[in-house]
Length: 142
Image 1 (spheres, rainbow, N blue to C red):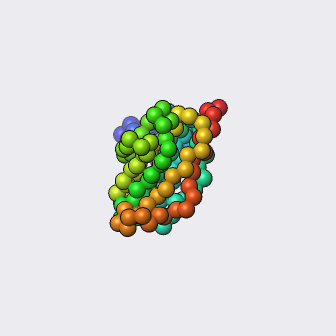
Image 2: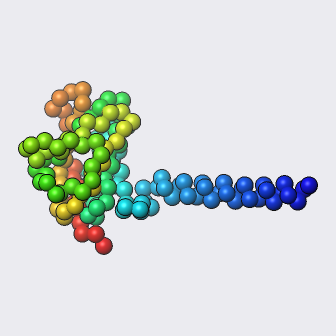
Image 3: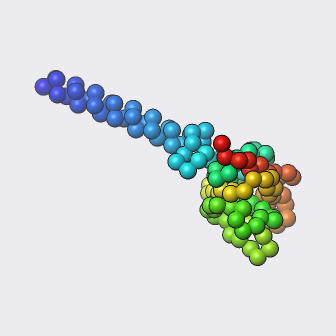
């Protein structure tokens, strides 16, 4: 009986290693996803990357690790500048805003080339900015 159980253990171990490798590839932000790379911006006392550079169609995801909500605000975006969004709401004055609760995220994919500046505001103290200059530089896809 040592033959089948040894073989069974080798198969199970191989499957576990394969699943761990696949899982790590899916959670690593430097590995391109099916739809393109994901750029993470962590929001704490400020933003982890105030000058994100993304290709057209790539996702930029803001993750709130604070204990309080934050707002991410883009002014001047036109219809067609964004190809995907999660957690953002559009207003009539070309403003996209996301209120991100603690341990949550919001994301955008940009469809046009250009520099998009944004602000991160403290959700509990209206008007208090957590960053002074942050932008997403959208470049042509390669």
